[in-house]
Image (cartoon, rainbow, N blue to C red; front, side, top):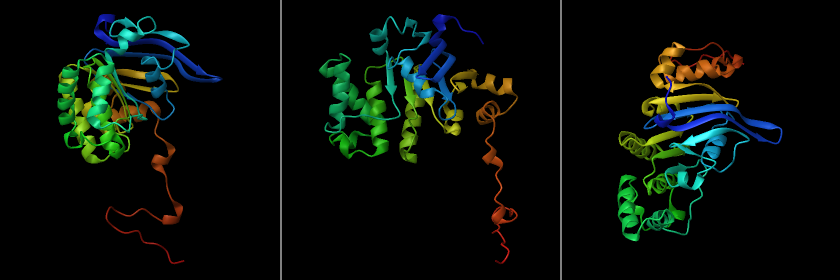
Length: 272
């Protein structure tokens, strides 16, 4: 399905990025409609984090064009940064601030008034279930709490487009549940979300659109239903496996364990 440029929150064409002799992005095309919940999928080293870094102006592309929210990412980077949010995989939070102070700092950096940022911080701390930790130093937060605080900080200025790089990585079930519900709420409000994750079940449950890349190239993208229909499969995981190809280890056999037993039946081993 084609979209006009005005319908797209992200319109990146022919992105190339090299680091020395290594080509991280090799003509990547990425189109995300406004209001989409886009699962950005690929194996390690596919170029997901590199392309997000380029989209958020951490790096510049060696070639290609980028339009975000209808603006040229190269010519209007500051205006774009006022309207996007970013949650990186590797968090760098100010540990000597409390959670409330950290959100206040982020809000003030975006030009919010003291009164406005205080009200938003209260709401975000409640929404991310961190109110009880609002006065504690970030240094005391668990990994899941830090992840939730980083998402709250990315939302403080009410961005229209949010990039989330592996927000579910290494956190417990409770933290993951809070983040899932928060992302669903943002999607219902029409915020455009780009999410990278290796947990395809999460992508299946949350995403309206998806793109699958490998070796710095987009293999296929569109609505989740379009991807399933086009590839003749019934799940996003099956689309991923078909396009990426199933690893050989998926059908691994261990000769020294003998024949496979029925589920729940212990293996019978030959005497040594």
